[in-house]
Image 1 (cartoon, rainbow, N blue to C red):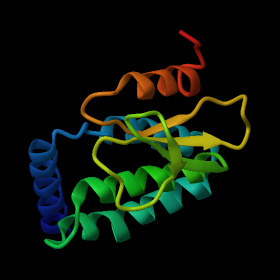
Image 2: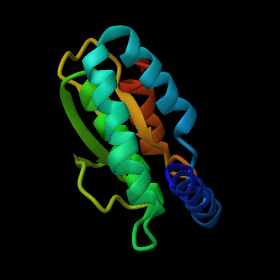
Image 3: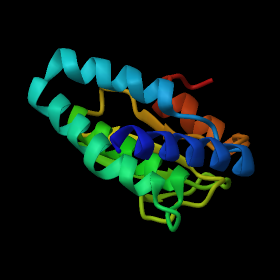
Image 4: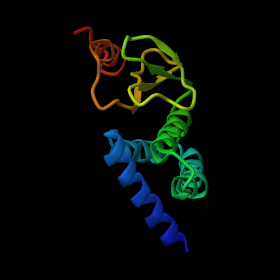
Length: 145
């Protein structure tokens, strides 16, 4: 049964990625999980529990938005990795607190409370606007161009 649910969730997510043009975050989230496992075993277990008990059933549900569910999983991972706040940056460069539903053209970043740490990318629009690119360069790459 669990394998069927996982296969259904994977198929729904793949279809949603194709339909929306959204970028697939799974490899990045795997890297985050690997880091979390090395740094905090309890937080890693909570992330896996969320994946199995919340994410997969939600993505498999016909009434859900698979891309939004994966984005929320990224927010959960980032929050487990480092305290901070999650924001969404619109194409004009305006940031506001993360709130579902997130527009498909938003850049979603987790800003660590420790400002010396780079922002974590949780969601990228199909194409970054110039303003979003500047936010990405400054907050993620920590470069001013």
